[in-house]
Length: 217
Length: 217
View 1: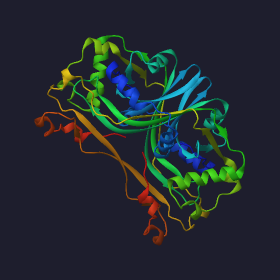
View 2: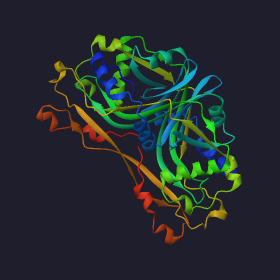
View 3: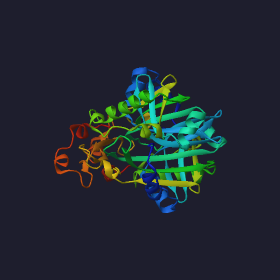
């Protein structure tokens, strides 16, 4: 997150934030389903919001086999960043304002899954991650649908996590300045599921438990 | 957002989503304070989460004058994307699952604000956007703090907005498949403000109104 820390706070935060712990990186990928992927398109960066999921030590995403984004991801290394904004941090000076957040950044060359079974397993894993138990209840995927869908995978080898969960770090001489200081938590929640128009009454009356269990961010 | 739409849904969504309307682009920049900026670093894309704000027809952000991100942004064009995930869309087939979202993408060459007065005006505008009325209550900024902070600006000339707020688009032959279908709204809210340790009791007892009025996403 951009800010201009003093040397004092920079040292503290480097200690708190930098992390290459594989378990932490995996946990962040699992918790932050919306990633922004930077591709190289004709020498320029292009950042695309994309849903991600994880299988072991790889992060995956999908798209239309014909899309520019998929072609760009296969042609050159990408940078995938997923972030969650957790709180606004209000200090006594403008400079010390910041945000609490979690983010994970992964760099490398994505590969497309080629084997249809492997692709279908990956798409099932995405659905099971989001809505456990739903995949088996869906109208089964056709070979044509599977062919039209590209599934990309990127190893979590070159990845880093950052977490800042601190409060304002005002220097001592500012602590008595008469302004409110502290953190404003930012929360996420799911609303009431909205059945599709025309959904059978019995289905609409009984929304699956995975809807209320859904967590994101 | 990644998915592999059929030709039918692709046409409908191109109509719904593509937009270069300046008022819509401005409204999305105002509503989505967390952007992901793609920089070119040694020929590779690097995506950094960053708070943004708007002044007229420009989007702005800030960082340490010495940071790699600021140097990269001044050396080559960037792609700035801000997104909000609004709902999960559950269809009868895996292929037709999607998400409702809003996003704005801006491309171009950022410029650093050089004039100290212009920089301070821009930082005040950021604070006024987030927490109206707070800036004047803060410990005033020092010349050294202003110098250590880089403020970057990018015109909103080369920008596009995408909004998808639809429900599942199953083909007619799938509509009777016996599975729940519809949308699961994703909501954002603020929690109870947490005063900094040691904050004067009178200040802690009376949190400013802009905290409860804060909206994001």
